[in-house]
Image (cartoon, rainbow, N blue to C red):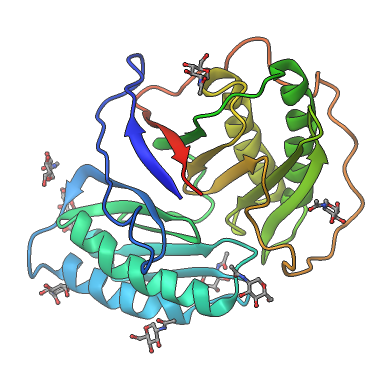
Length: 290
Ligand SMILES: *[C@@H]1O[C@H](CO)[C@@H](O)[C@H](O)[C@H]1NC(C)=O
Ligand SMILES: *[C@@H]1O[C@H](CO)[C@@H](O)[C@H](O)[C@H]1NC(C)=O
Ligand SMILES: *[C@@H]1O[C@H](CO)[C@@H](O)[C@H](O)[C@H]1NC(C)=O
Ligand SMILES: *[C@@H]1O[C@H](CO)[C@@H](O)[C@H](O)[C@H]1NC(C)=O
Ligand SMILES: *[C@@H]1O[C@H](CO)[C@@H](O)[C@H](O)[C@H]1NC(C)=O
Ligand SMILES: *[C@@H]1O[C@H](CO)[C@@H](O)[C@H](O)[C@H]1NC(C)=O
Ligand SMILES: *[C@@H]1O[C@H](CO)[C@@H](O)[C@H](O)[C@H]1NC(C)=O
Ligand SMILES: *[C@@H]1O[C@H](CO)[C@@H](O)[C@H](O)[C@H]1NC(C)=O
């Protein structure tokens, strides 16, 4: 459970909104963040709205069997594309209720935007008038960092980098139905670092790997040394903590032989990644309560 406190990133931040509701309501799935894209709007009772309603009510029936959902309806300017992705370790009931919640809530939060993305702990929902599948252009990053720093930052990074890059290889190679991986490694001071990465399965192996590489490289830039963190974009995400936050008895995906280790220094890049122009960043320090 996180309480979110905003901290503007002066360089990149275009706007910042903080949502405290539901992060403290245990009865509902943990809602993390949403982004309404203001580039294109629809009006009440328009064809787009009708298509959006139809799409989101049908989307939960399109499960590919591994918690990925996609549906496109309508034509021309009124085309609505939508996807949903459940975290790879949660059971189908929890997935379904996360979808039920998000399809209602995201429309309320973004009442007239044609494009929006909502992030929960257990699922994400995105809809757009633009094509979503296999589109790797990142418009907005969401960063969430644990407030605690490692007492041994160099060793922590030295253990975290290889873990996340191993998971990147595992998830990328997961095939067309699911791209998800979790594992742990020992960290400094007898700690264990637990990692989770996931891509939407429509991405190719290379697209997934590149997407994860981009966000993993941002650890150094945005929360180097934090004992926990996540970066969320619609097509890939990671999370790491020094406690086990994922379901150990996760679905078993066939693992092909691991790819060769990266030749570049496995820890973190010496030069920070360059942010695409027009990109939005949302940065939160999360104080863990439990
Ligand atoms: C869409 O609506 C939002 C507020 O509801 C507004 O801020 C934004 O400028 C609108 N975008 C366009 C392209 O009209
Ligand atoms: C779409 O659903 C919303 C929320 O249920 C409702 O207010 C709106 O009237 C619906 N619009 C259309 C065109 O069906
Ligand atoms: C689609 O939208 C664009 C830009 O808003 C407009 O120029 C075009 O005429 C629209 N096309 C249709 C078929 O409505
Ligand atoms: C973890 O997996 C077990 C077995 O599939 C399931 O019973 C349990 O509900 C899962 N927990 C979560 C949080 O999904
Ligand atoms: C999700 O919504 C559907 C349709 O409204 C309903 O049949 C189903 O029971 C709901 N599932 C959960 C887990 O809430
Ligand atoms: C962790 O490190 C950051 C950056 O050095 C610092 O701003 C923050 O106060 C530290 N957090 C704690 C709990 O000491
Ligand atoms: C760490 O991961 C291994 C598999 O790589 C697993 O067997 C082990 O139980 C995990 N340890 C903890 C403490 O979760
Ligand atoms: C998206 O949905 C279409 C239509 O059901 C399906 O053919 C396609 O395989 C789905 N794509 C992915 C990546 O799951």
